[in-house]
Picture 1 (cartoon, helix red, strand yellow):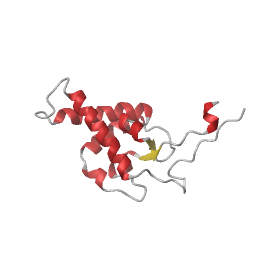
Picture 2 (picture 1 turned 120 degrees about the horizontal axis):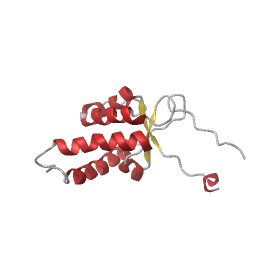
Picture 3 (picture 1 turned 60 degrees about the horizontal axis):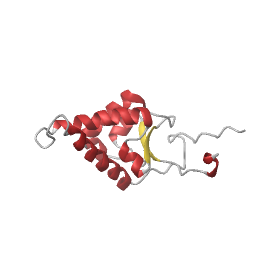
Length: 138
C-alpha cells in the first residue's frame, strides 16, 4: 500500500489555477442567504443589518477553520487553504478572514492568484476542490 502524495502548497505550485470569480461570488451569495435565514432567529436582518454580518463572520470562523469550506463553497466546489502549506487556516485566521471580508473593500482588490487583501492578510487562498480519482473509492 502506498501513501498518496500530497499536492504542492499553492505558494510553490507553478501550475496553481484559482477558481473563477464567478464561483467565489456564487459561494458568497449562498452563504449570505444562509446568514440571512439564520439571523432571523435572533434579529430582524432588514432592521438590524449587523445580524447577518455577525453570522457570516461566525460561519467563516467555524466552517473555514474546521472544514476549509463554507456551505456555499461546498456547493460551488471551492475551498479555502493556507497559502504557505495548503492546509486549513484554523479558527483564528478564519475569523479574521471573515471580519475582513465583511469590510467588502479587501475582497475587491485581487492579485494574479485572485487573492484579495483579506486572503493575503490571513495567508489564505481560494482553491478548487480536486476532482475525485479512481483510487479514492478504494
